[in-house]
Length: 143
Image (cartoon, rainbow, N blue to C red; front, side, top):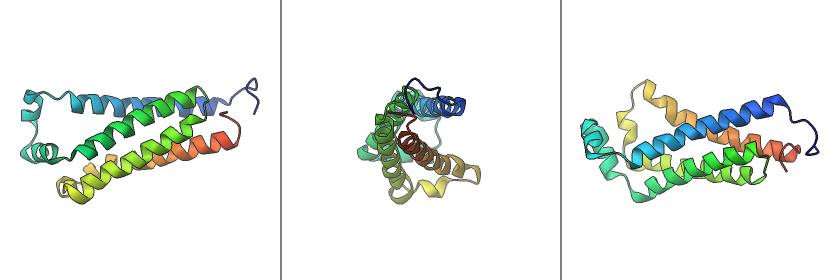
């Protein structure tokens, strides 16, 4: 697709939805790293334990996931092919972060029936955004 050809409206809808999704992830990360002692005290003892015992590399993976995802969304809106690589980086960081949650930290023990929604949605949406950006690049929507 030539740059001067009209980009389909559905592309912009998906790109804006991706930016909103990843913007919410970035907001969650900022809330996480700016948590005050008072905020921490409001958490349950189980949540406090999970936060206190979280390895630094899991926190680093969280930051990489949300920052790469957010900028991947921006690059998707700008129709730049680096969006594909940023979404892949974000997805890989999500998998590393969730490996910590589910394998090392015992997070799985604290989930109730609705607690599974985000741990499933986040990697699924991450994979979908990566695949969409890759498809858009192969089909000339981003160059």
